[in-house]
Structure formats: C-alpha cells, structure tokens
Length: 385
Ligand SMILES: [Fe+2]
Image 1 (tube, helix red, strand yellow):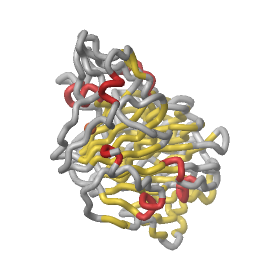
Image 2 (cartoon, rainbow, N blue to C red):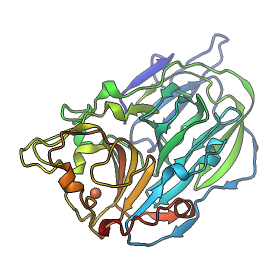
Image 3 (cartoon, rainbow, N blue to C red):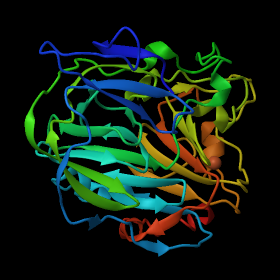
Image 4 (cartoon, protein in one colour):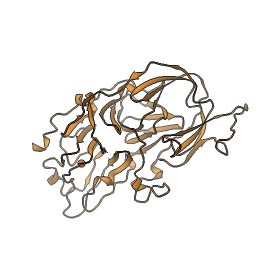
C-alpha cells in the first residue's frame, strides 16, 4: 500500500550476487502479503531467515465467543480492560468476525526478550495513550498519541514503550489494510481530494543491522495459536531493503476533515479499507455552515454493516455519557441516531473537538467474554430515557 522506499544497501540489480566484505553472499528475501501478485519488498539479510533451531509448545490464543448472534445496541468501557505487563497477554479481543478482530490492550512493559509476528493478520495499532518505538527489520517507527501504526501481516516486530501507561485499540485484519481506492490515482498516488497524502505517512527510519548469532525467539501467531520459534540469528540482520510493503505510521491528527454546508456522510471520514470493513477517523472540525444546518447526524438504518465507534477524546455531539476508550456497537438491522436532546443542542454550534475511530464491518461481529466483562448494560435503552 505505501509507496516505493529504500533504506540501507541493495544490489544494483535484483536477484543478483550481493556480497559481504568477506566475499560471502547476503541472503535475499522477497516479502509480500499476497503471493507474487501484489506489492512486495526485497530484504537483504546477513543470514538466511530460515534457520529454526528449536520450537516451543504451541499456546492457544483464540478469543472465547460469548454471543455469536444478537440484535441490540451495545456499549463497552474500553478503559476497564485491565493493564498487563506482557504485550501479547495484554491484548483482549472483544469483537470478532472472519474479516477482523477488534482488540483492546493496556500493556505496561516493552517486549525485550522475544519478537512477535502475526502470520494471519495485518495489524492496525491505534495509540490512544502512550508512546514508544516499533522495531522491525525495516528500521524503527516512533509512535505516540493518535498514531495509527500499520503493520503488514508477517512482519516481525518488537514494541518498546516509554512508560507503563499505554492504551491501544488494535484491529487485526485477515486481508491487507489499504488506502481507500477512491483516494488513489490509476498508478497509486494519493489524489488531491484525499484527506491525507504521502507526506503524512511516516516510514521506518534508522536501519540498524544486528548481525548477531544466538537464540532468538519469534512468537508467531497463526490461526489464533502462538508458536514459539527459535532462530539462530537476530531477525533484524538486514543491511538494506526496497519495495512497497513495509510498516508505517499515520497520525489521526494529520487527517484533514472534509466539511460542507450541510451534514457530510461518514464516507468523508474514511481512512483505510480492507476486505469487508472500513476504518474512519472523526477529528476536530468546523460544523456545517448552511444557516439552517443541523450538525448532529441524522438517524440512519445501517442494514449492511455493523458500526463500531471507539471514542478517543473531546466532546461527542450525538451521545450522552461518553467516556474515553468507550466502544459503541450499532449492529446491522436496526436504525440508530443521536441521543434525545443532541439534535437541538447541536444547532448553532460552530465546531466539534471530537476524536474517534470508527470501524464498519460488512459482516456481523460476535462478542467475546472479554467484551461482556466490560459492558455498559444501560446503553441499549438509552434512547428512551
Ligand atoms: Fe452510524
């Protein structure tokens, strides 16, 4: 999805001899998430990335489904997810289907003695609280409040936090997450009407080659099972890479809102898309400027998608009793709209400071036990108050 980039040294021609100072060959690796028929990157390792020396017993990480089917508006207090030291243990899948898993996490500690690879899913890590660095074979990406950190499936990484107070909203996508097609030119440039452009995309920096032998544990998740694979060389032994498939960061604060004289529909907030779901960013913006405009959204009947909203910060024009980190789920099949009083209250308002991330899935989401543990049960009837 991102554009061509190169870091470090690569040979003049691909698939040709590329030698170290001692005359031995570097090991070329083609990395892509869709076979040989889409974007890819070529990486040059000091050692082949294939040398497994030991395997651990697999660990089941599958979420426990509590409600497979339902038809009610639901609400979850995301900040009630308990902080946990370990990054992988801290991740709690709350809403899931075959296209994506919605995960909340409050990790306290950096990953230092092992690496992680999600072999199934692209990961979109939205940083609500906290900051740190993502370390990858491509280099480092610094992240902080409001960043979407985008990691193609199969990317080996370590995540380091600056302190223990971190809140993450993670989407695992079983298909590649991309820029929306409507923002892309025939040949791949972000078009003039797109709410963000290439300059807003932060690519890996500071490629440091770790030419180290030893025992390097890569915890690799496949089909919700975590496999401990030990390799003979450091996975970040890359001297150079080039291509179009690599992790990057994009800040929600760099999303330029599209506004109008009357209420604009949710697609103007679209930020990313994948098979059967989209991601939208709701950011501070001026309200509609028609003299009789109603800035609050109209009621709408989302028959073909579950609408999930993750509240980040600011005031929310259409809802009462919103807390930071709250998730609301408005399932396909029944209409939803502003809470009583919100429409009148919005008239004449000039701007909103709301900050939120929306995920609309085209197939229903199932609720896990971790979701029910943080549910706000008063929400379903809250329009009738
Ligand atoms: Fe909606």
